[in-house]
Image 1 (cartoon, helix red, strand yellow):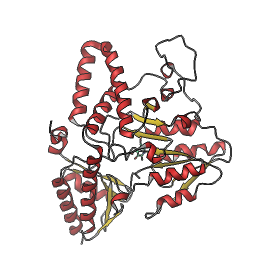
Image 2: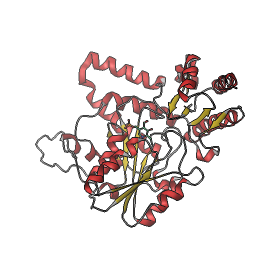
Image 3: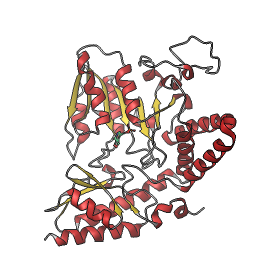
Image 4: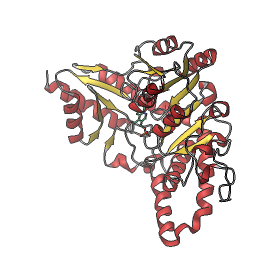
Length: 378
Ligand SMILES: Cc1ncc(COP(=O)(O)O)c(C=O)c1O
């Protein structure tokens, strides 16, 4: 199948909102259609096959993260759940602290802030556009246990230098936690290179799969530091031996999976990652960065438009954001929607998020519309 045929959405809409929810590729829709038909006709007689797909998904998730072992992959309901497992699982002592970006998405702020009732200090750091890592590293002190960041900020689209942050965490003996939902599927991520201890990514954005599932990778030594918060039948080495009494669960990451998993989500995500791996992820990343380069360069030339995302390619992933003087972001997004160009409003910004398969003609069409809108107000 040709790449364009994998993405029927491009024949109908200009979808520049992958940072919210992605349309499904044909591979995902085909896998789910087969699952629905089979489940309807045969009920769970295909259960053995579902387990094989689940194992393949863990393996594919490892490939995507350049991780060693699928024992380190847990499948949880969403990114927020993974972050909460860490926040609630660590053995905190009053006076400990955690560092995170002040304007990060709530899922990477609130679970840490909620620890304030047990005496943990939540240290929210303002990110400077030019050297955001410096401020985060400077905030690490003797009481810091965790540095937690979204590797790509959901509003500005700013991409953080994970290697630099990971190295600083190692130096200071601090756990490094990455919310990769705005990163994974858009650009490669190597857990070893990043020096990560935990990486979590929901499936419905750049991974292009159904909602309600997330990949939660944990380094074994870091995982051991988490108390088991939930217990249940499925998180043990022999889950079908229903007589067991092991409430602490397996040493592997399945200890974060107490009960029945989201099979439809697993089938969709397995197909989506299979598709992503079929195209060299490095090439797909280049394609996406070329599109965000073009958007950046085009927006900067439009009078009245102010770019609110980074100009430098290495500071960007799939998000470009901007404002138009004299028009609210909401008005701009609405006007674009009326032209069937789907973007998002985030605060005072308009956020555009193509994916690697977005045709360049749709990027040009979007720039033309924005230029018309800006001109209409001058
Ligand atoms: C950076 C970031 N983290 C987390 C989330 C939410 O993730 P989930 O719904 O999987 O918990 C979002 C969603 O927009 C996000 O942008």
